[in-house]
Structures are given as C-alpha cells and as structure tokens.
Image (tube, rainbow, N blue to C red; front, side, top):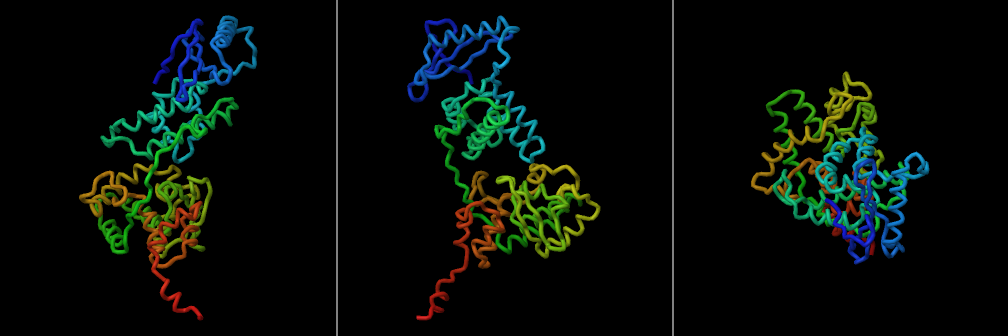
Length: 378
C-alpha cells in the first residue's frame, strides 16, 4: 500500500491530509541509489514545506558526503526489517509461527516497505478498512473480527519491540486510541455434557489409526478436560511439569506469561504414568520429544472427529454451537459450575485474570436460593 502524496512548490517535498484534515509533510530523496520517502511531521507540529526542503537538503548532503556524516545519525528501519528481527528473537515462543504467518498474510505487503516513522494511525485504519471487506482464501468469507484484531495487536507488538529493544524514537500507531479494535463475540455457549464426553472418549478408544497418534490425542483430550488448559498450554507441558505424587501439573498461561497449577483427574493418571516412562524432563508430554507438536497437527486430527460427532448440519462459522478444541476448556468450567463449584474456585482453576471472565458460568450453577431462604433464622 503506497502513500498517495501531493506535490508542493519545493523539490522533493510532498504532503497528504490525514483524517483530521491536517497536512502531513514528507520528503523524497535518493539513498544508496534507491528512492526514499521520509515523513517529517504535521503542520500542527509547526512543520512547513520550507522547513522540509531544508531537511531534504541536509539529507541529500549526508548522502553525498557519507564519510563526513555525523556518527549519531540513526537510520529509521522499515517495518519489515524490525518484524524480521522480532520473529528471530522470539523463535522459541509457541505462537511465533502463527505470528509470522499473520504478518506475511496481512501486514507485509501493506506496511513492510514503509519506515516506522511513516506508519501512522491513518495508514493502519485504512488497512483495517480494507481487511473488513477482503475475502479470505482459506474460508472464502470476509475475515473475522478476531483475525483483524490479532493483526492490530501484532502491529503494536512489533512497534513496541522497536521502541524498547532498539531504542527508536517512533510513535506506536495503535496505542493512541485512534485505532479501534473490532467487537468480538467470544461467548461460546457450546460445551459437552457428561454423555457427550463419554461419547467422545468411547469414539477415541475405538478409533482406527496409528497407535501413537491415538495415544497422544487421548492424552490431549484427558489433560484438557482435567485442567481446562488452553491448546498451546497443553502442548507445552513437559515431563518436569508433572508431579504424580501430588497429582498436579504446572501449566503455562501464554496469554498472561505466568504459570498456574492444574490437577490430575483419576482417569488421567494412568495415561500420564504410561506416557512419562522413557521421557526426559525436557520432553513435551504430547509430542514425546523435545520439540513441541504444532497446533495444526492436533487440529487436523481432532476437528474432523468433532465435526462427525457433534457438528453435523452446523455452518462453519457458527461459533456458538460448533464444537472446536477450545470447547474442551469451556466444558471443564461448565461441568464444574453445574456440579456447584464456587465461581472463585473456577476462576482459580481456569487462571482467569478477571472474575468477569468466569461469571458467564454462574448461570449454569444449581439454584440454591430456595434452600438458603428456608435456612434463615427469622
């Protein structure tokens, strides 16, 4: 996405009007034989076309006299250059590959060739507007609000990396309240009742296929239903995280970058005892190796099973009624609520940051009002 600029009377000085009808000035010149467009500032900041012309003269002088250029002149990198550094630094994070794919699919073509100080909220908002109507080649539908919000979050993360790690004096375009995230309905209503859980387990026990795949899929299901951990959290559980004597599992909450304690259900313990044999402390439970199994590897096996058992006749974008991997976490909390577990206990077991996240399960708890009133000593 290139900048549409209008000429001024000064050579190599241009401007555009932002959403507030305010002029934003730019200069263009040659650097190392390539054309460079550099944002200087806005009229409200006191920037004029004449001032920009002087800045351009200085920049072209530096280009001609590289050997005499001040050593403290800091070159602002492109968004693509910073993004590549960020992904390299975060290569050990479980969500890094997803973020790299998100960057390649949504941000690289639009922002990659722009320098950081050229990217403002207007440019990001234009990209969001475009993405709202763009058709996803994967689903053949417009992109979901969550996908667009993930794109906004990644843009902000890369800018923060540049500001903090590279000490660049640039403004994060998504942190000034001029870029609004889309409203997302995350309230999945679907959970598996006890009979459906039994149906799923029975199907897996009798499923044809490779034995090692059936083993790690069953282990994944049982851990998910026993702890309510998110997909990536389950995939990153290692042998060292499991304490069979205390019947606990240390779970990593990758969303909030902390750990919490999950508990081992009696139906899970035999599977863990079998799986742990022969593993080293750094081996992941699900993969059985020091390398984490990918999210896609799990989803490719489980989603067709969910579709066959529970999703027949449902549209692919029916978020409220379709069973997906995250339904297992929702099932854990829902069944706890149904059996009367206190909301604050559920909050702790789910590792929710805010009690409001847990309150949606309160409606599933048994009504205890009548008995409470009868016990009043009045």
